[in-house]
Length: 395
Image 1 (cartoon, rainbow, N blue to C red):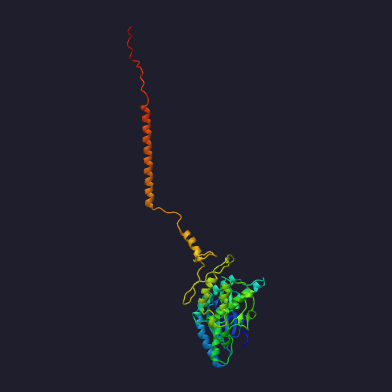
Image 2 (image 1 turned 180 degrees about the vertical axis):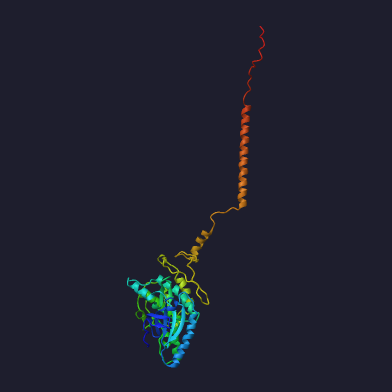
């Protein structure tokens, strides 16, 4: 392999190398300053061809330009934007945005220093936020091939996960292997990449989902893949190192299936199951850090994970048979009182007024009759008039 380029070297009279961010079998990633853009930080990915023969170099350059033109058209807020490609000293470079933040591997190490690991809620949140990114890539025929905790950065400005180090380098390396069968390559990180990538270099959407599931169980357990994988039974023994719900464990186990045909075949399938898994089932899941619903994903199904809604399923008491519940339900459904129509209410009011008037009239007549009867019973009295004198009495 070629030696790293000395730091402070300026490439293309524009990119000053500051540091080496990473190095793998296919190349290196440098942190650089873009002198032509006010010393803005950027990432330079270098492709290191396997062979120095002219034919191999020509094939590598052609594939590099073809793949770079595809990646240049990708625009997603959680994918670093590709800026340019160039060649210098028989080295191929790709320029992309630099993402400020910490990798999830670094975040795991910080948690482990406090005796903690990622919780189920945090793992679900990561899945909900990264699945739309994978869907955006997969429908364009692009497979990441190298998903791992150190290739996912939690961006500092908004705490969203950003998928880095994918695409062109691994894709070109795989295709060069097909052109030159004598060249043996390994695509993806040992322990994170599925069997089809490690043996044949082929990768599918389910391959990325496998690597994503391995990354999740590493974050949940704090253990490296070799500590969790049983290479005799070809199964993952990870649940003893963490506590998650059975539904979430089943989701991850299927993503971790050894055979590609046994896994979920698309992001849409995973998201559909995750929708039910992410529904809070107990009060302890109701926290400020609860995962947010997954937005509409750019797939042919255009599925989405909506916000959690109350269940619409009727509740049935435990321990009762349906035939025992029938009289109870019928009784509850019967109305407690009969409601009168508006016309019936008006007629009732009118009849009430008539009744009151009749009673009042009858009472008045009785009272007047009683008074008259009392007056008829008084005897008349005669009073002498002072103006008339009595006639004289004869002797």
